[in-house]
Length: 467
Image 1 (cartoon, rainbow, N blue to C red):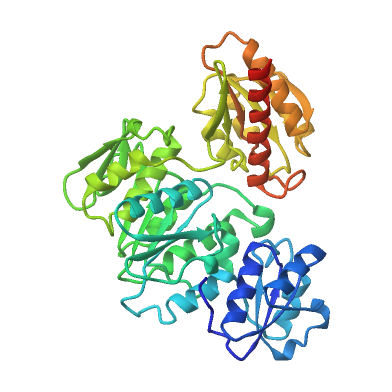
Image 2 (cartoon, one colour):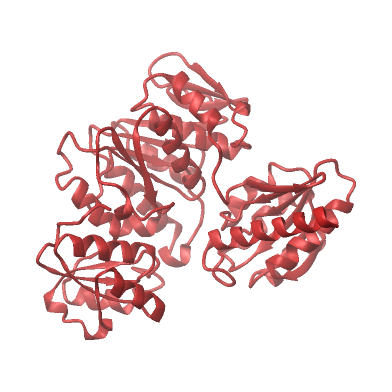
């Protein structure tokens, strides 16, 4: 655990007692702060008390005595309107921050301070989790003490304190960026931008501005790498002209930067383009979208690993990321792919583009725009199995373009899809869970949704063996 000393002897409030809130309580309490906390969920309140906080309804807090409010990133800060606890904090002049801000103040209280453990921060709409995990894998394979967390895996304050050769690799959502004004990463990575969570940001322009803020927070002697393959990310790259910013592209041959052409990764940062790796050797990174992830990870790690061959070897050995195009089993010729992390249409498009014969499980809590943008990929869908709140809207989009069935639940969808896939004539059909939706209508999070899918597949495999 990283102990937060920034509020020693002061009272700090924590609102929202999920993973990051509980971590913040433990860190603050260990650092000498007096912590009060609240969550609307009684089970979460019990855990907060066990972590070291005094549990008190937020409306009863003595706001004039509170030095800071540590807010869960899941609680609305700005849109569609600030949560009431945020409004109270602002009226009282209490700073509203997140757990990443506590991490930043502890790891590097002075952004210009040298000799401290480097921080790599990764953000973007899609691919950031795979890129984060891949960066961690490359650095670990090359002898660094890598601490990976943030929006992926562990909360940042649950990571180990810095030691020799420690590098922090932190995935950042926009919600976390909003709550971490003091984070100045040594390396900033922006994967791509497309509409997502606009209900929480108000507009695409606001959403892009938050991502840009993190890139601009990198110190002058730091490094950024930004994909230039979409308009919003490209505009952010342009706004950083004159800084140490590397453009990254898949499909564009860059005179300077890092790019992928015909499936081959090239480094053209300082001289003529140098061939690094044929990405078809990286079996856990299929598809053009994963080529982008690999190129960004190369850009981030080249700062620390000078030998491109060592980075290439680590990319090839990457085992893949759970819940992101993860192969979780096979029955005969049918493969089962867990892409539960595809929580919007743009992410689902990546998986749909890879496989030619798909029995597609989709649905959940819908995002703005639904699956209209996926129509070009419907020719690959043998049949769709619709679940959750989005099922009826998705059916209207699919109607007349692809076969579908209302499966309602994930377990039922797996059963139906497996039966149809086994009966089809395609040589290599896949049952693909790529929901293009959030999970919160039927599941706690996308991890639980993916785990349920994996369990359902294992059950079918067992039945097949005993049949």
